[in-house]
Length: 553
Image (cartoon, rainbow, N blue to C red):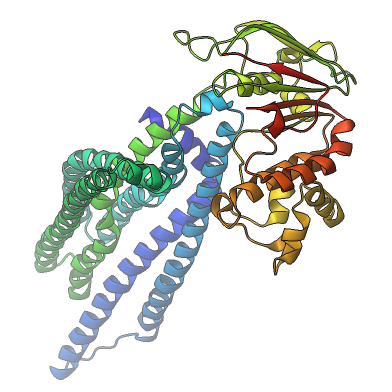
């Protein structure tokens, strides 16, 4: 159960709300017990008085107080149930929000190399299905057994008020039967829960891979193989879920049977004590009906603990992810950044794994303040690694990178990244509006600043022609934009950031010659004001530069 400790600590932060939700859950069960028990007592007492009156014996019964009690329990049960649902769902939604925040907070500091260890589909599954699986931890795995135990204790005390032996025997029987059934059901159920989580994760991975790689899968003619893998995992998941559902139904039925055994025992004891003159007839009717009302509180206990296995499996996978430490760490004693914008790359060697060839080998480069340097070369020669090195997204095996004379390894990452605008090879466009995508670079940017950035990348006229302008929704991964438009939107974000150092990896990719020429002219004044590293396959596909360096693999 150690894997659940981080999430139990999150639960502890809401202990007040959780106690209130559990108390409302218990109040619902208690009101149900009171309603059924008092109704049975009242009906029996009314019948007894009627028989006495029919026999000519003088008798009287106070009907107003028990009648008011029945109404009270009926209303209390309804009100407690309503507020219990509101309170517990509020707690669960808050917990889910905290869980997602917790996981995101651990993902954000990860450098690209570390983050690449997790497949996108795995991260997606853990942010959705695994976190959702943990919402059962309180609502189904912890609260119902606690409430069930307290309900048994309450009914035991209630019966004990009239007949202590009946209370002890009935409560003991219920406790033994419910605990035995729960353990019997939960043990295989935990294994089934883990298997459901595993099949769900694998199915999601296959589905995401199919959607993202559909073009490649079709090109190689293996789409059917991918679909077959999805069908296989979803089939196994469905089969395991069916087994889990049958086990849950069986546990609920056995819990109901246990309650009925308790009812039978309490009824026998009530008849015996009534025959001995220890309890009245109405009380004898009250005793088994009070036990019968426990069915509502005890039925979810065995089935709820079936979710424990799935929650534990989800917790283990999330722990594997959140426990990963970033390879790029903050300096122990950070140095204050200097105003200089010169970049010095001094004899660096970069190797992504110990067994891999060096992406850069003993490489040096000096970029003076305000200088524009273009580095060209074939794919795989280390151009993107060079830009990642300047942004400290990778660490050199040897050598160092200096900004303004300070080793960037001694700068806070926030200070370093605040001075760099980086257009990576991949244009990251989010499912939001054009304005929201731009304001990722500068949240306080005015509309005028947004239009100015779009103007510099020759995108203003296109955005203006759209019905919603800056409020236009671009779709997932910018699917409503062409490749060149998405690239220019990403570049506009770098322009809007207005950092003194620009790292531009293929800034003119995906553009026709006329658009590239016009955008080059509009970018010229902006580039003139900053230190720039340009990366591309050939010189013609880059803006003008003071120097051009050919990088060989």
